[in-house]
Length: 419
Ligand SMILES: Cc1ncc(COP(=O)(O)O)c(C=O)c1O
Image 1: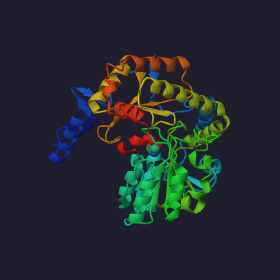
Image 2: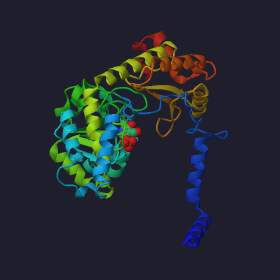
Image 3: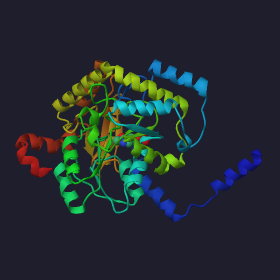
Image 4: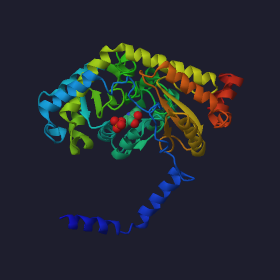
């Protein structure tokens, strides 16, 4: 048996890759490697490192009550029935969670799936037809673009957070699906949701809001931007990843009972990929209760993010787009971003590198994701590091810095033409 296995590995290694694959692998290598350094693999963080890389915004990944709920469910249910959720029926931790989450977000019902990626791809794929225009904010998450592709529909991108740009496009292409993120994952900007909804409603468009980075964070109890803005009744679907504030793995589509049921039985990832496990669902249920109850974490998150953003701004970093716990240093080219990453990591500060295709070309950045457990000492150390490296990383030469300085020099109105 072992001999047969070894033989198959050997013959696999002997397989000759055709040029259509070798070309792609070569393109990947050229993109990701700079003078032998890997763009996404820097230093291994030591125990003293300040980690600004996690989407666990309320620091729930080790919450004892949540872990205990999961352990109990594992003991009782093991890994449950391993199958697609189309065969799920009756009450369960998961169904209970869906109904409670929907109420929390002021909507009627919800359908959980395997990830935020599956929620977005599956939703757009199942609601847009090939002749449906899909109006996406230019910064909308990649999964929403992928769903549009999967539907065979036309993507009609509008300028970031610009309802006038959206309206112009709708006038040209007609009724369709309007897609926005509540908080944008690279810039940390917040969607002007009311303006977007008003435009979308004027033309009878369907509205999808990705609440991945806002669920648990925005609103008195973390109900997300849609409910906190009083817009839940005017929006057709919210989606979210449960890998951010929920500190787990999973995704969800929230909306009317009829439409979320439709999603569950029509979207391809929901049908053709197995559902989540019972202890994960038990974890979601307890996490929702923790998120709703522990307001202090949300307040601390806001305090931490405001403190760091203000200090970075004082140091002349252009963090003007951030209105949330996501704060990015927009270094520009990939070479400049490597320099920035290495300078930060050498001093024990770890952020996440974002480059094309996660950003536009030459808009690469290092993203800091702030969480509620960061101490003032860690934030001050981060600020000190950012102060010290400005010359080394040529921060005053970045396009983002120059744009900001020009804006400050000319004043807001004169720079409208620059945007
Ligand atoms: C805005 C947004 N939507 C969706 C996703 C996908 O979520 P998941 O990681 O659960 O697949 C992400 C994660 O990167 C995200 O930032």
